[in-house]
Amino acid sequence: MKRRVLSGMRPTGKLHLGHLHGTLDNWVKLQEEYDCFFFIADWHALTSEYENTGVIRESIAGMLVDWLSAGIDPDKSTLFIQSRLLEHAELHLLLSMIVPLPWLERNPTYKEKQEEIKERDLSDVDWIHRYFGLDSHDPALFDLIINTSKFTPALAADLIVRAAAALPARSR
Image 1: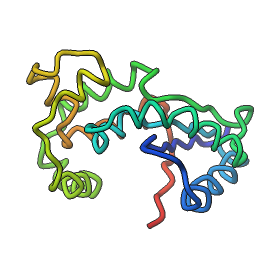
Image 2 (image 1 turned 135 degrees about the horizontal axis):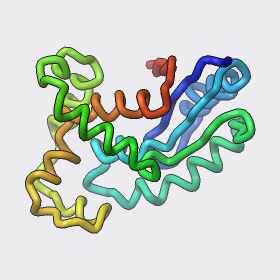
Image 3 (image 1 turned 60 degrees about the horizontal axis):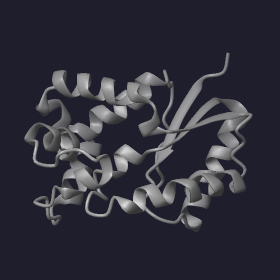
Image 4 (image 1 turned 90 degrees about the vertical axis):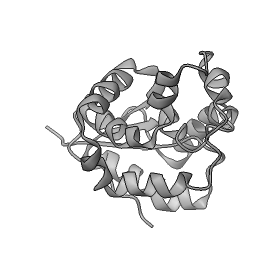
């Protein structure tokens, strides 16, 4: 039985050569050795693109076409859109309720996300209504979606739902 690998990309615009050489070439090779699950991380994209959620929806189809053009083979790998699998959201919610904040604060991914949003305007919550069609004035909903302390449990949920044994590291 092949070991399972999970990796995803946030649909935040058009892909570029860095995606091809930094990620997609690696994915093409991985699908020969592993049971690969590659996903479009549209919920993860909300941590940075909440001001312009339209770019997320607009980028999904183009991203998938780019993956196929680069050699990702749906007969060798499972491709999916994160938001289409409710198990991700359910497990993310459960992990968010039980993982203590000090554990998250020690995590490099959490620290990186905190740096990313330092200069962002977090007062505009109308994006929640634009993206989900939900009431943007519900404080519990706002906390669940925008609070970056939830990003790491969301990533853990992705891995657990797919029972992945490996997560390819990003090249910097």
